[in-house]
Structures are given as structure tokens and as C-alpha cells.
Length: 127
Length: 200
Image (cartoon, rainbow over all chains, first blue to last red; front, side, top):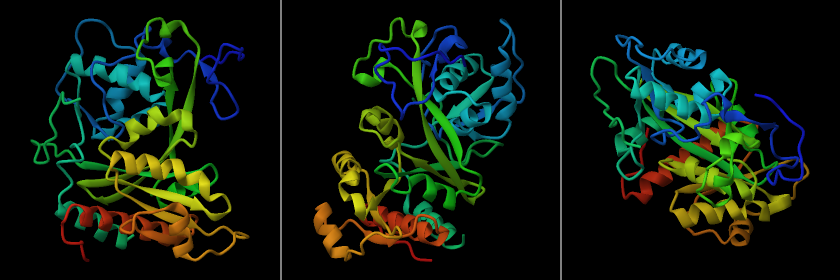
């Protein structure tokens, strides 16, 4: 991502903010994926799917390679060193082409049940 | 959001469950330190892009041509078993990043709010946020060297905490201490749901 010097029009910019970037160049200007994709939504590549049609971007291919096993969106972003918003758009492309599936976590109202909470407590105690 | 429904049984490939716990508190309260102490991997960092959408407008037209900036979020991972992982997300410490909090808090199991008695008021916004959104939380009073030792009751009063909210002394650098905070949070979540408190 290209950094550029800050100017007065950057209202977000101060010491707490990161570098100024044009992050959506990679996605061709698209800033929204079709779906939200939670940070801990698990992404897994379909091992049988073969890309057809338009060629994939290198970042698309890296994503597919990185999620041979289920990986959360946040870890994919960290691993590929891409902003989460960009990863969401790229994942949206891959989902629409059937190359990956995204498993959203259950809504807080439904889960986790007491067995899961118990497993978490026991797991933490064992750390 | 629900393009693929969550399915614990899955087919051939079982999809594990990933739970989110937020680590919140004021700037310098020890959020990143706690995530580091608990994570089984070197804490990871991810960036969210700040757009005008974050400033309260939903109009993103033309954003692709705009320069913007990013805010980094630290996160760590604890593997409970092959089907269950806990992700700890340090929340961005600035008020203007609230829109990121909404995303972080969505579906989260709960939150740990770290309080620094030298700057107790710094954790008020976090407490307000979780109270308003009904996200279960516990408060850890991080015992910094040189900080005055307050009684827990005095801190509870100063924070105007609901009597049911667990309040513990902690040391964010110590894994054991962080573990106790997380256990206390999960037990609190179970209590809030009227479930029996999980016992080992």
C-alpha cells in the first residue's frame, strides 16, 4: 500500500492513526463485499473447485492457499498483511465463484451453550 | 451475513467454533500486554480501514479514490480443543473508533475491561459501551507498579459497577492472572444466562 503525506483534509489523521493508504486499489475500488464476514468467520477453500472465467489476482490465490484448513478472517488478513476490509471484498469474489466457503459464527443469542462454556473454562484452567 | 449457515456437525470437514472475547480499557491499561500473555501464538495484528463510513455516514461513493488511514487491532488465539478456539481482540482505544467496536462486539462471548487505578476514568467509556449493548463483561484492575492500592470495593464504587459484575485484581503481564479473568468472564456469562456455573 502506498503511503502519502498527510494533508489537512485527512480528518482521521493524528498520532494514533496508521499510515495513510489507498487500500482499495487492490479491489478495483470496491469497498463492500456482498456479505459482512465476521472477524472470526471461518473460511475454508473447496478442494475440488477449480477457478474458471476471469483470472484470479495473486491475492485471491494466496487466500485460497491460506485456507486449505478453516481459518478465521482476521488471521487471513494478518497472514496476507492486508486490511480486513480488503480481505472481505476478495473473499466475496472467491465465495461468488465457489472457491471458498465462509462459515459465520453463531449469533451470540444462540450459542455457546453451557457445554461449550464448560469446555472453555476447563480448557483455560488447563493452560 | 448468513451466506453459509453455521453447522457444527459439518460434513467431512468439521468446522470448528471460534469464540471472540474483547479486551478493552483505556490507552495504556495493558490490553496488548494481556493479549500477548495469553495468546499461544505471537499476537497477530490486523488493520481496519477507516473511511467516512466510520464517521457516521453510510455513503461510500468515491471512497476508492480517497486516501484513508487504518487502525491496527491486536489479537491472539487460545486453542481449547480441536473444535474450539478463543480469539482475544484488543479494542482500539480511541472514542472515534466506536464503529469498529460494534463489529468486534457482534457475536462476542463477552469482554474484559482493564482498569488502571491511576487513570480510572479511562475505562468508563468501555464500561458504558458494554452495559448499553448488553455485552457481559468483567473488570480487571491492573496492578501497575507505583499505582495506589485501592480496595476493590472503592474501585467498584468509583466505577459504579453493577453488583453482579465481577471485579478482580490482576497483572496483565501474567498469564495465570489473565486466565483467571477469562474464567471469571465465562462463569459470569453462564450465570447471566441462568445456566449452572461450569465447574471443572
